[in-house]
Length: 253
Picture (cartoon, rainbow, N blue to C red):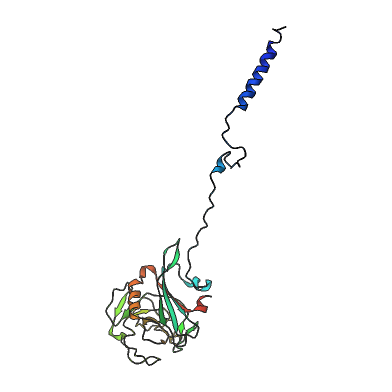
């Protein structure tokens, strides 16, 4: 009898051994813990939320229509923002585009400035006493005084002399000591004194950035002499500088 029951006893002992090994196994993960995609324990490392990508900065105050006029090659922009469509006072800020990841960044300014006596216009005409609204290249400079170290081609010429009085009775002498030609109705690559008018004489011309004489201009933008010198030392033809000019409402279009 005892021999016949031995296989059954061995089977029972084997089964108990297996159950005992399973119940005594070392638990390596908390069963209550959430399971990550990589199995138990993966969620112990907190997943970090990716930081949102920072969009490159645009020049403040410019709307899509104005931004579209800025050439893709431009890396410097002199932004002239008028106080109103009929105002002769404005503010100038120089912006640079040195890193595509950062976009446009203000570099110098704001500087107070004057513009045309009667403000701004989208269709400048000769003697309308308004400054043209738009985006124009800055390629040429000059003045009565010696070159202060301008990066743009500089034409030192005594014909930049001016006399007389401005609209407020202020003396105009010295206004053209330093000038930067604004490429409105002119041929780029020539002296600011060049009188070629591709759009015709009736559309005016000779629109410059020049030294401020303390009052409104006939259509130019004027800055103090120290700011003009700073501008001449900063504007770099390799960066294809432009001027973006107009009253605030026009620039926001």
